[in-house]
Image (cartoon, rainbow, N blue to C red; front, side, top):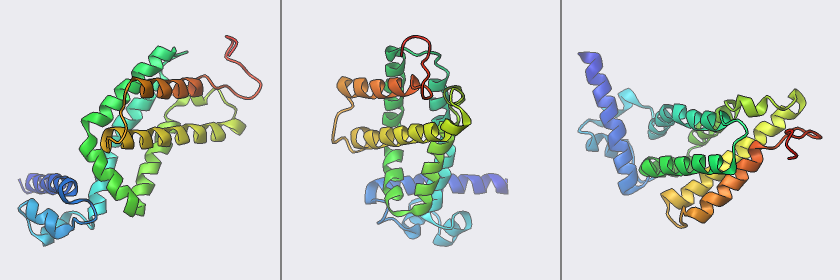
Length: 201
C-alpha cells in the first residue's frame, strides 16, 4: 500500500510538473510550484526527484522505447519505395503532434539543462544503432560514419518537428512530408563506397 502511494505521488508530481512547464515555462517553474500544483510539499518533491531536470529525464527514458520502435519500423522496410518512406514520415509527424505539449517541455529543458541534452542525444544514438539492417550493409570501417549520418538526419527531423508541430511557425504540410520522405529515402538507399544495391542506384 505504501509503495502504491509513493508511485501515485510520483506520478502526480510528474503530471503537475508538465502542466506547470506548459503554463509558466520550464525556467520559471521550480520545485515549490510543482509540489503545490501536485498537492504535496516541497520536501515531498525532493523525496522523489533531486531536480526538475530529473522529471524530464525520466520521461525521456519512458518514451525512448517508442523512439526506437519508430526507427526499427523504418529499418524493417526492405527496399522501401518513396511512398513507404513518406507513410513512415507521416506517422512520425502524427506521433509528435499527439504529444506536442510534452515535446514542448522537453525542448525548453533541452536549452538549459546539459543532462537533458545528453540524454536526448543518447536516444538518437540508440535509435541509429537499432537500424541494424541498414548499418549491416556497411563495413566496420564505414559503419561509424554511416551511424553519424543517420544521427544527424534524426537531429534534423527533430528540429523540423520542433518548428512545425511544437511551435507551429511552419506547416507540416504535404510539401514538407515530400521533402522529408526524399531525404530519408535517399539515406536508406545509400550504400558503401563503390557499391550499388543491385538496381542501378
